[in-house]
Length: 96
Image 1 (cartoon, helix red, strand yellow):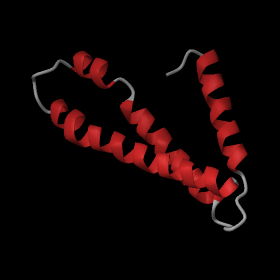
Image 2 (cartoon, helix red, strand yellow; image 1 turned 90 degrees about the vertical axis):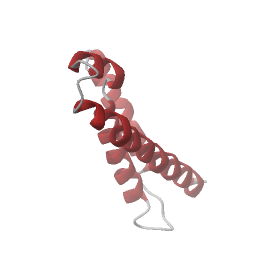
Image 3 (cartoon, rainbow, N blue to C red; image 1 turned 135 degrees about the vertical axis):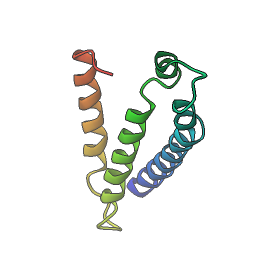
């Protein structure tokens, strides 16, 4: 069961990271160099996408580390508990 949870988590995070990276490369970065959108408009469209990408990459690395001792999957619960704690702290401090 842990193998399935790790496999699904890795698959999702890998896909999600690739998708967010593509959006940044194809849309956000080219628009930064144009005068079509004002900086505040660009910020409104893409909001915190770079922070989301950084978080996804960090999560993917942590999930991959859980499988380092394969076939013994350890630390998977800790990874998600830490995410909840970070999110709860950011929410309580009113951070993005």
